[in-house]
Image (cartoon, rainbow, N blue to C red; front, top):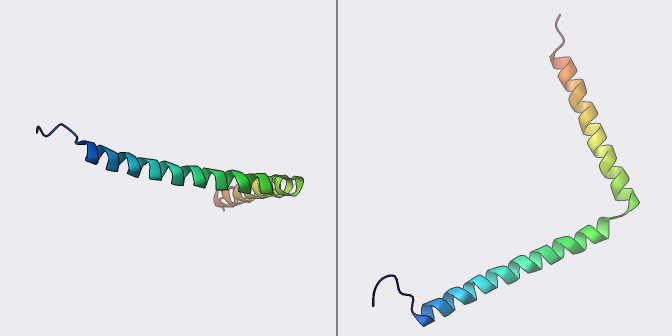
Length: 70
């Protein structure tokens, strides 16, 4: 048999492997989606906004201090 021909048992093994990886990926995505739905509330949005604002403010302060010249 030529090297570029796949036997049926090899293909079935490959297909089983790929399907297993996709089911693992689908489970992971479902878990992430469940977690996102759980944390999607006003408190999370406000805290996230404050974290982003604080990070930008802190970064600006650090940058200003670095560019101060005596």
